[in-house]
Length: 149
Image (cartoon, rainbow, N blue to C red; front, side, top):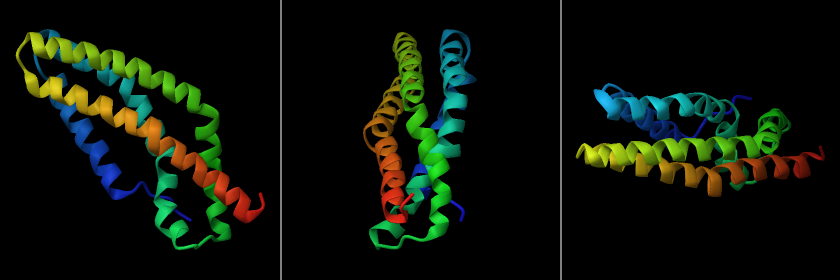
């Protein structure tokens, strides 16, 4: 079974990435601050799209009570997320620190769209910490119970 990131989440990731790419093309301190964000964010986004967010694509099926044996393959992802959650949260701390710097530089340079972007990305990280990651892990735990694994 193929596990897909819910479309709205994928689009949000793509939009955030595009905004960051735009910021990295700014000259001087602003571009440098954006590049620092990109450096700490890239591998993190890859991990999220590899194993943290795809389990969420099962939610509509699970809400309908549909549990099938081929869903067990998602356990590799959810177990990895559960094991690596402390690292993912530590990465968020580094990302937020870089975003705080980006917001400060953006305000100094009166480029408020980048300060707003930094705040939006920080809120995105909080949503992942408080909703997306726990939900993905719970999907795995639920399937273990349902599939007796």
